[in-house]
Length: 324
Image (cartoon, rainbow, N blue to C red):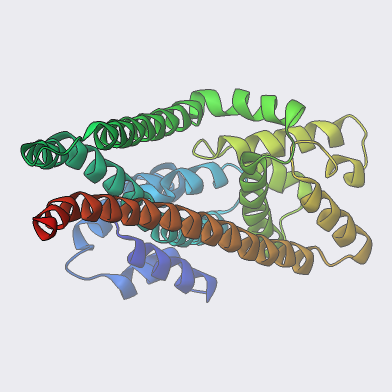
C-alpha cells in the first residue's frame, strides 16, 4: 500500500513529464519498495497499470481514482483523485475542528449537571434539612435540572442517531429527493451543491468536457449526492434541455444555479465556480461560528446557573449561623 505523499508525488512527477516507471524510480525508498516491486512484477506480467494500481492506493482516494479511470487517462485520474481527496480532507478537518469543541462542551455540561443533581445535590439538600430548613422548592429545582439535562442528552443522542441513519449511502438519495421536493433551501442541498461544485471545478481545470465530467461524477460510490446531481443534469441534457436549464435543476441550491448561469454567459466557468466555493466557504464558516457561539453560550449559562444555585444552598446555613 502506498501512502498519500508518495501518490501525490507520483502524480506531480507525471504531470511534469515523467513516465510512471521513471516516477517510481525517483520516489522509491524503504517505505514503498515492496509496493513498487509488486507493481513492477504485474507490469512485467503484461497487466496494465489501470487494472491494478487503485488497489495500491490509500483508501482516501482509491474509489475516486477507480471511478475516474473509466473516463480519464491514468495520469489524469490519479491527479484528479488525489486533488479531490486532499480538498475533502481539508474541508472535513476544518468543520470537525470548529464544531467538535462546542458539541463536546455541551454534552459534558449536560452529563455533569445530571450526575451532580443525582449524587451531590441530594446530600446537600439533606444537610439543609438537618438545619430544619425546608428544601421543597430546592428539590423541585434539582428534579427539574436533572430531568432537563437528561432529556437534552437523550434528544441530542436521538438526533445524532437519526442523522447517521438518514445519511447512510443507501438512504441519503431518498432523503435528498424528499428535501428537493419540500425544502430546497435545506443544509443538505447546500452541502451537496458545494460538493458537486468542488468536483466539477476540478474537471473544468483539467479541461474535461461537461459531458465527460457528468459521466465521471456519476461513478463515485462514496459521493452518492454528487452522482445524483450529475445524473439529473446529464438526464436533462440528454432529453434536449439546454445547459442553462440543466443547471437550474432543483437538485442544486438556487445560488449555485445563478453562478452557473453567469459562468455560461460570461464564458468564465472556472472563475465563477471558484467564486461560488469561496462564498460558500465564508457562508459555512459564519454558520459554524454562530452555532458554536450559541452552543457555548448555552453551556456556560447552564454552568453559571448551577454555580449560583449551589452557592445559594451553601449560603442558607451560613445565614442561619449568623442569626443565632
